[in-house]
Length: 193
Image (cartoon, rainbow, N blue to C red; front, side, top):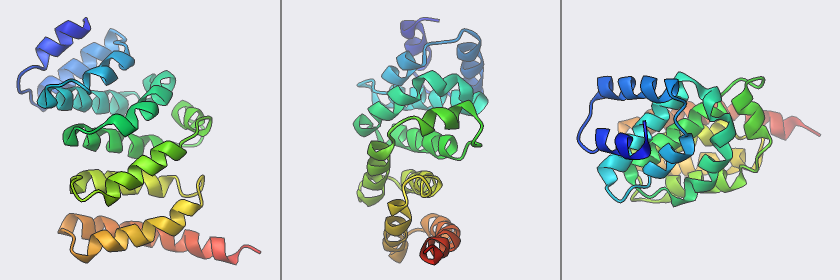
């Protein structure tokens, strides 16, 4: 399938079944993920959202397919302004950062400078215009990166507490879980000589 053919297929509303079918086809055809990433930046925001939905599903189906494209995906992260796409990119990063240490995805991530991604994730958490789901996925990705970037464990609780002050039930629940996860790591950091 070409980029133009894919763009035509997702030009109109599609459901979960169509996403799963297209995910299977794109995976089988070894569709260039850079091209799919580019489509997520399409001027037609709903079309870009559908491309990001496909991108996320491809990651969930076979994360290792992303290994050679993680650097590009992370480089493009600061340019993701489409709210629907932000949700899928944050969710991909949440899953990528929780991968097992021996996975190819985790090995690739460990070789990359993720500090710009960490900054972008915090920016999404701070931005009042960013949707709650994006903030939650960004928070989980940051939580997963706290051992690599210890300063995240210092900054994340304050941001979570701020969001929880007047937050929705979703951010209340996720925030409490994340803060609970941070508590043991904070005490470990403090106990070190």
